[in-house]
Image (cartoon, rainbow, N blue to C red; front, top):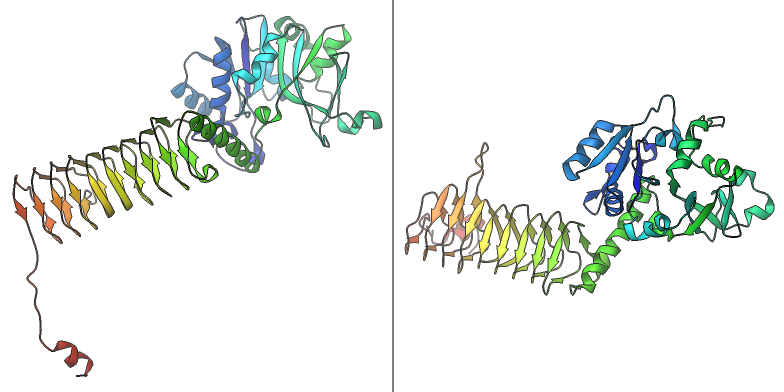
Length: 430
């Protein structure tokens, strides 16, 4: 499609009350600006990002995740406002879509009706049951004849329910002709993109409205807006996976990162959190478990388990109150109350309750390697670096401080001492 896209991401976002640029606040695991870029790149090979506030930080983030973006620094000191942001952006194509970087719910499909129509300006609108506080879009015979701010509305215009959704598709010739003539003669002393509507209308240009879904064009200006956008995004993500065959118990209690992939016959129970670029394959994640940046395949996890980043579980059972970090477990059972960090554990191995890998000495992390068919008794400590070969038994309560050879029993216990009658002596009773 012969289309250029300009994404406005220059604003300070003061209502977020944050040192993090507004457009980098995450929604379902990704900065909100990334979703607008996804939609833009699905439509165009000429995508421009207009920056100003913390521009270096935003540009660095985008360049780490996207290719073929072009950046323009707004001359905010001399040309503030949305109209000023679009000035001097070197677009290549004859049709230009302008959207906002704080619209994380917008999609290429939602934008398609705007870019497919032919007019001097195509503008997005939606109807609100209560449009109080919004400027009204006045439409006559399927053409926009003006935008009237609420304070300037006549009683009849106040009855209009149609408002501006904030996304426009311009003919490049319209921008070239009218942007140099924009004025900042207003209370805010800013250059407004909406002024192009009246300027184009005054010379007989055609301005066509396209009704869009409010949810897809919601802007995020506060933490409250952020939470609402997150809820809508989560509903979309979970609906997509459920339609693909994933079972979810009480899905409203589940969180799934937008980068997560679910394959095969998966079950997610209530309260599950899956973060980052995790991949869950034909597995059962039980209630209130957390999976972070890990792969879980043909396995069960939880309830109340935590799989931390860089872990891989295959044909494995992880029970309640078990934490796994940066470890590979293949065919392992760890039923409860264990910490397994920086470990490689092979098939047939059973990890008893209270077992921990002591992987950190205060300066560095060390690895624990455990072979096949190892039985680890409860309350054992494996002090890394250590290797436990195949077919080993670790007796309950053992602290393993050196490698254990194949087929051995490792046992380290203080002999039990029993003092007869001590109870009565201590408490003075018989």
